[in-house]
Image 1: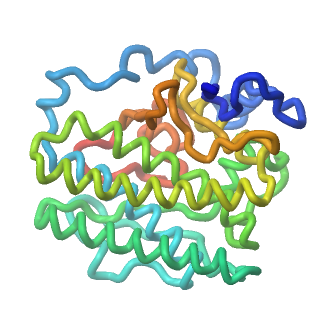
Image 2 (image 1 turned 60 degrees about the horizontal axis):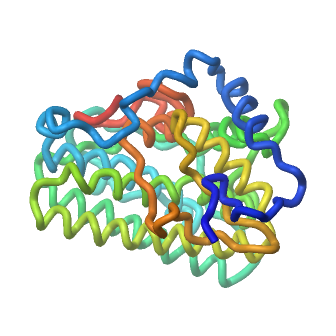
Length: 304
């Protein structure tokens, strides 16, 4: 059975009568976007042209990935261990920024705590690996917001009301939903970068990073599915999809009747995101130059 990109298998009615179009309209309205913003991307949603690809090199692509790994590492390390990246793992080219928000989660189950700790160690290793591979070309950690950005994302998705606050660290369920915001984005970002990488060794390393991010995403999606968070993940997925332009890519975790742990297209393949699509999501605004989880933008050549 093929899957719709809203994450619901065809011929299965999702419980709760979730209105995807209404969710998208609410997302644009809550984040301050209008019809013009929804139509901006156009042809930029495809794989970059040959001329565009030649304007950047493998180091630029790895530095773009490093920005995302900084974000994930800082989130998971704080949630799992109550600390961030070491001082010697954050310096580099561009402006070094602070991290606001984040604290250790009081996990209710040993299982989820173990998952969080494992992912945190993996993400810290990813940062160290990319920094080592880039050498003197590596970018510094940009300014990162791990506090109010989650509230903005949750409000825009319709998880909470206008006057409410979403605390990603209040309990393990909130932590899992916050992790869901990131994980699928990392997988699709690495896949989207694959056609742009020129060196086979770099491509092999990126494939290894993608595989680990996919394991993480599957882990988070599976736990959320087991806990019945169908509607919440559907709303987050719809919000991300609102920032992907006219395409309908993102997928939730399915329904109680049928799981969608692995988001694929009709060929059983994972989909890709362009750098612009990724930035739209982490900036929480389509076409933005900064904002959301990166208040001052990301460092490196690929930043807009």
